[in-house]
Each structure stands twice: as structure tokens, then as C-alpha cells.
Length: 156
Image 1 (spheres, one colour):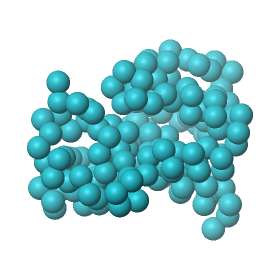
Image 2: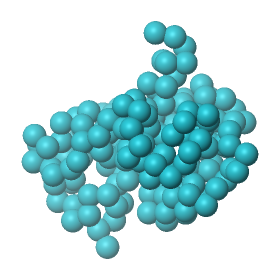
Image 3: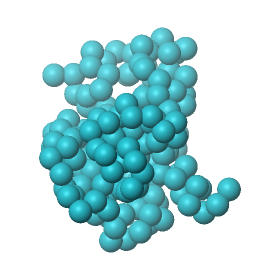
């Protein structure tokens, strides 16, 4: 496995949004949440499967044709699609796709991955906290079962 492939696998774990899935769908699959009584969709992402199901990928010719790997490589960056999803992610999920892309461009993938792994690491068990609800799918399953909105930080 080459360095780029290793970094991509780490990137999947650190920020599943980039692979075309919700971090929650990826973490739910990784930790088999359905078998713990939590009705969440599993998804390994559209990038590893080369599918066009993700919000951004299915609306972007450059991503579909693999002429860019990151939206920030596009001459139209930031486009309406990424700006829309970034606004939504800032509002509901306490993160910014545009800030993540800027960090990768400025600091490189390795530094970005280290920062994201630390940012989303569960202080209790070392697992990964979901950006979609702020919960660890290893040690917060009891809280996750009680949530009315599985993909929100607060049940408002």
C-alpha cells in the first residue's frame, strides 16, 4: 500500500464527509450499530466504491470524471454546491468543509489528518466521535439509542 493510499484510508477515518458519506453512516457501519439496536444507515462512501451518490459528487462533473480530487483544486472553487453544504455543516455539525480544505491546502494532508484525528478522538475510549451528533459510537451507544434526531448534536 502506497503512502497516498494510506493517507486516504486515514482521511476516511478522520473525516468521512470527504468519501461521500456521513461520518455517522461510516461509523455506524464500522461499529455495527444496527446490531446494538440503533437504526442507522451504513455507508462506506462513494469514493471507495466510485459511486455518484454523494451530495457533492453527483452534482460535479470534475469529481465524477476524477479531474479533481479535492474541491479546492477546482477553478470554480468555492462553488455553490460546496458553499451550500458548508453552511449546513457549520450550522448543524460544528465543522466547516471549506476550512478543512483550506487546512489541507495550507498545511498538507499529514498535518490535517493528525489534527482531525485528535479533534474527533473520544476522550473516554479513544474511538472516533461523529461530527454529525458529537457522540462516540463505541462508548456512547446508550445516549445514541435515546436520541430523537440521530444526525443532530442536540435533540431540539
